[in-house]
Length: 212
Image (cartoon, rainbow, N blue to C red; front, side):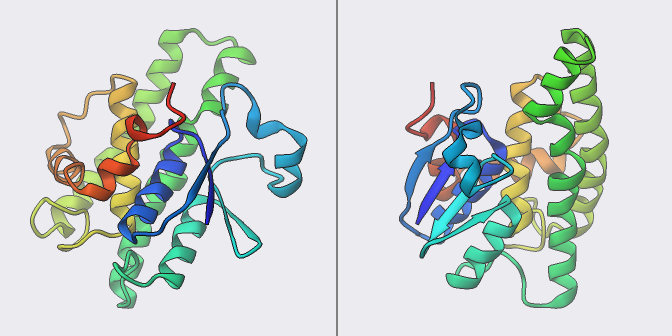
């Protein structure tokens, strides 16, 4: 497998965690977002969105982190990241989507750059935007964690799931942009435990060869 990634991309971070959890060897191809490597013609020809991550396997290129993880969960079934039970699966997917669809898109590099460059917003305004949407999203995530986490070690029940793969990169981003997470003790406890697991450590931004 070949993973097109960038060390600081939270979406690529999710996929790296999945690959390490499933003990899948992969070749990492860095696409430096700040240098515009993801906008070059050869990459756009293969991936018209020009985003990372993308995963190449058996001659097929897969895009979008949740779709990639679902694919990995199908081809390497253990450990299972999406529960087989329909109710459990729906809850896990909902929590993952709450981050992937409702928090992350409002805070990624394209959006914050647009706020600064096209709308003329200053650093304080952009930081306020970033913090607001993380905190709004985390309030719901905290409530779900209290309801659905068995031991404050995982977001759902008592095993790693897709939802955990979304939580850790988003917590990393919150801290990177100095957004307080003290109001979300369940999320903090879960994140602290997950970040001790070998797969999460290996996938962390600081462990990536393209970090600079």
